[in-house]
Length: 249
Picture 1 (spheres, rainbow, N blue to C red):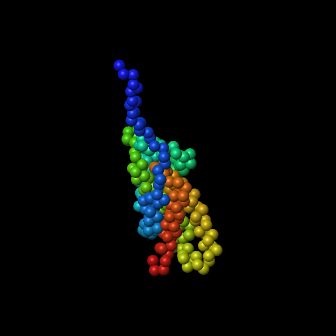
Picture 2: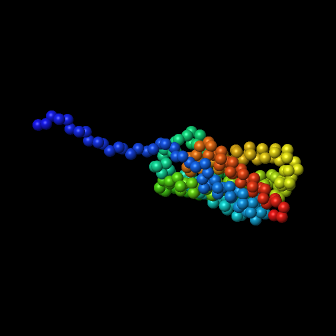
Picture 3: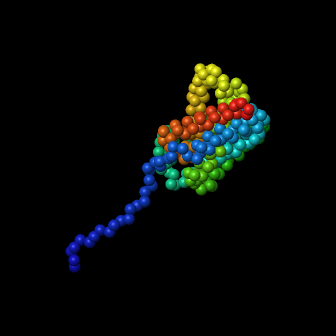
């Protein structure tokens, strides 16, 4: 009998779930789409609906878009994450706290949508109850959703939220009003103060109604990428406010 030691058998490596964060691009499709929406589509819709404010009634098209967008965000919020996204779900305490701001954003957009379509209080209550039942059903009956599907579900909500902010700023400055490029050149101090207010307010708004839903859908992107994304959004809002006020338009 041979006493030579037998070679050890190699054990195949056990597959482990990677916890390394994905490297996200500075700007992704949702960023460009949002910038185009607030700079081009939103001003056109605003005028088509008679220049209604963010909480004015009599804008059925805008109101319907807001309610449908909220439905998509609720599905994303209620759905379970795909197993491959489990590691991404717990990467950051800050990013993990996005659910709270998203709930507040959903309430804001829902109220705005109900008001725009002149929805009766009883009908609105029924819709809210039906939405809660649907969320429970989605959570337990629908298979876990992968990140691309979750991102697609919240994208309409992000677009509607961006448009809501644009509408709010347009209502403050007046549409077409006096906030024209010519007025900014004639009174640069006032224009600078108004621009500072726009940037400060839009930052808070961006975190609540755009950053939060996108983080709930897919927690990706670092500080630099989100600063660049916010800058593109702010530029889109300013462009959307400026071009309809150019002479001859």
